[in-house]
Image (tube, rainbow, N blue to C red; front, side, top):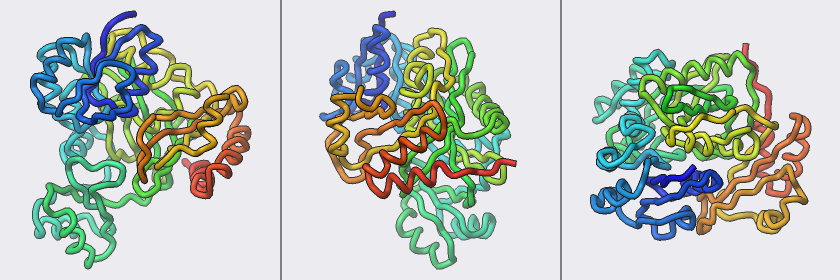
Amino acid sequence: MTGTVGILGAGQLARMLAQAGKPMGLDFIFLDPAEDACAAEYGEHICAAWDDEAALKKLGRQSDVVTFDFENVPEASASLIESLCPVYPPPRALYKSQDRLREKTMMQDLGIPVAPFHAVSSRPELKAAVEQIGLPCVLKTRRFGYDGKGQAVLRFEEDLERVWQDLGDSDLICEGFVPFDAECSIIAARGLDGRTVYWPLTRNLHRDGVLAASVAPFFDSGLQAKAEALVQRLLDHLDYTGVLALELFLKDGELLANEFAPRVHNSGHWSIDGARSSQFDNHLRAICGLPLGDAGHTSHSLMFNLLGEMPSMAKRRMSTPQSEPDVHWHDYQKTPRAGRKIGHVTVTAETEGGLRATAAQLAGKLGVTAELNLEAVMQDVSTP
């Protein structure tokens, strides 16, 4: 297969797409305003603003198909490129995902369970929302929030003024607080012909709003089927092409949707090493009109995100991967910075017991935080 894939964004997700696509014979061109974009070594990098019309037209004219690696790409930019070449996922999916009120309203209309929510644009509306939803609740910016940014939990009446001072200059949404038993995500890929494949429902653990660890497979077939049915409603409604991730809460055996991401997703990184076809392989297959690969798992997998800087042991072991064939290090080649996602490591094993043993040993070497992540993410969750 040959062809050129344009990507709006050149971060680690674009990097991993290019790593998956190079063996397929694909070329890549990226548009990203960051001069040090970590995907740039895999293709031409157009360093320009998201609304630079000349740069957008160049990307569209030099690409056979264009995709994106994060959902805050302006919809107008994606639509401009769509006039020159196909863009997948469709810009409509961007439009829905970029505003939490639009997103939640759409899911509610589709019969996808969500926590109660209320639009907020003034102090009186905040007070009315809290009275309607009750405490505790969560106040979020409708746009641009990610990794726990742009949101705050309201537990007491006195929190209202403080949180309003922090967030009140944005359009907001107030949502009911979900005392979940577990966080999880279902990732699916839908092809141009409408065929869909699903990866195992993944158990996730967050720390300070940032994904810390994911394990797959984890849940039983009944819950898997429920999650697949929910994400399929989104895919069909949006006439979607590509990979989509639906983040969910599990509470008392039932699933409630939190949000969706119209792109490849952090909680699916384990699929590079633990599935027959990774989310990156199938995203490219979908947008290029190729048959989708099998998304079934080949091993039990546990992924840790690496934040701030790569552990010294990672550099050494990446040069000799044969010494630990069940530990897979991924370095995004990003400048170290506190709290920044700079890589991940996935542990794979034939059995859950083997996964626990290898992961516990690695977690101890990575530090106490990772060890706590392991214990929390692997704990049993009852699903009646």
